[in-house]
Amino acid sequence: LGGLSIITLWISALMDPGIIPPVSSPIKAPVPDDVPLGGPLGYRYCSTCNIFRPPRSKHCNSCNVCVSKFDHHCPWVGNCIGERNHRFFFVFLLCISAMTVLTTICALCVVVEAFQNVPEDGNDDDDDLSFVQRLWKAILSEKFTFIFGSFTLLCAWSLISLLCFHAMIISVAQTTNERVRGVYRFGQVENDADHGCCWNWYTAACTPCPVSRLPRDMSQQVVCNYVEPEEVWKGDHEDGAAAAGAPSTPSTTAGGESSSNGRIEWTEGTSTVQSPTKSSQDDKAELETGAGDGRPGSEAEESNTS
Image 1 (spheres, rainbow, N blue to C red):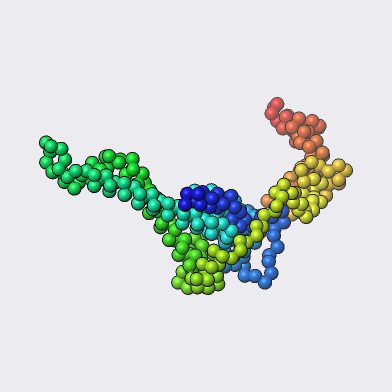
Image 2 (tube, rainbow, N blue to C red; image 1 turned 180 degrees about the vertical axis):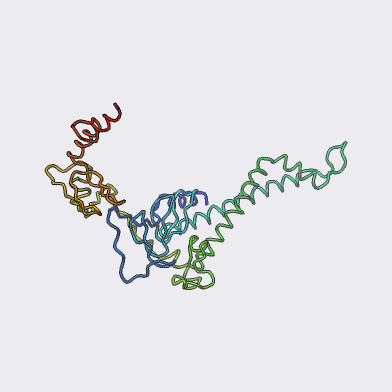
């Protein structure tokens, strides 16, 4: 049981749970055709992975991926539990629950044997020992066994409860995520995967494991069909640098005035922002220094002097 528990634990932790590869592209994924969209059993768009994930799948916030037939994220295993590793997780629960129950029974047998070896009359100077006194002496003689047995009893209680819960959701062809959200509660939505208890167990245990969607070579580069836009700002490249020799495109404000110097023009409460050009930078420098006669900078300097 111990070896099988360790093997199934590592398989559940290292196996791909059914990750749906994300699409790295600035373009939103196309909407699939002839499939239900939205709702508990429809295709739903994941903005993080940029995909329309299939029904019964969910985006895991811990792993930051979408998992097909998502059950839950197990922190003890350190991995998501999905369509590809749920059967191994269930076997792990079965083995570890049986091992904790067996350990608790063995510890109880040791304490009972120590209790039977305690004499009822005690020492020569003592009176007859009561049941509680004999039990206390037996616990003191096997205190480490008693503490370890108490710990495994608590573990067995929680593990058996979790095992029974997963056995129940397998019997009705549901996942933990669907059960907690109450997707099929009160018969509001029909579960198409439920074909009876026996067939559900056969599907969960005996059907071939789905093929992983992840690429075999994780170092391969994904090239997106991305076309660089001609203009991000008027006359500027995407990185913010001004295009060499690119003419500035005049823009018309709300009042009908056009401008190509890259400044912000205000007309009746509206503004038009254009890309900074060389002429606009020169105008700004002249305003700061106040160079030139009759310009706003020189007028401000004269007013300050007066």
